[in-house]
Amino acid sequence: MASLDEIVRYKQSLGFSNNRDTVIMAQSDSSKSVLTGWFINAMVNSWYYISFEQTGLLFMKISMAYKLTGENKFIPLNSIRSLSFEPIKLSANWTTGKSRLSAIELKVVGTDGHEMTMAAQKFIPGRPWIKHNLQNVRHMLGDL
Image 1: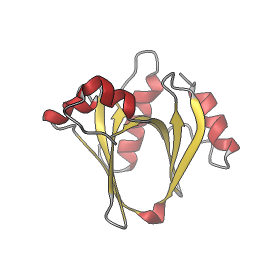
Image 2 (image 1 turned 90 degrees about the horizontal axis):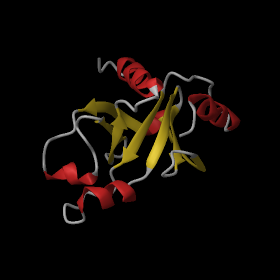
Image 3 (image 1 turned 120 degrees about the horizontal axis):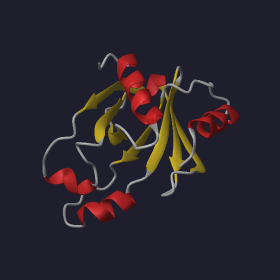
Image 4 (image 1 turned 135 degrees about the vertical axis):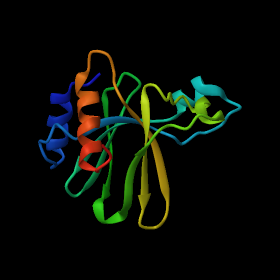
């Protein structure tokens, strides 16, 4: 797994801030097939380190070994209508690989009405910054 220092250095190399307190880790929710099961869905959905910048959201894609891949996406703040965190709902969608115990749903709604949901990690053993930064971001959004 990339260290928080490595992530911050990387995003700085892209011209973004050195803020280390607003980087979280999340998994996309691009596949919701109940038929393929949780393992395949967890493998299909991409993982990202997401940095909440003053100008928008920087998505830094990571590999299965949680290393930065060099693939990045930026969503400008003026393209975002709302950001919110919600509990992962108990339903057949548990098969997407999201766990209510270890993740919380991040919902991003664009000004065009399109919606994206991601499973933001609540904690990872040995990586206390994951929990700390998720709390920082939730506090920043007025969610706590």
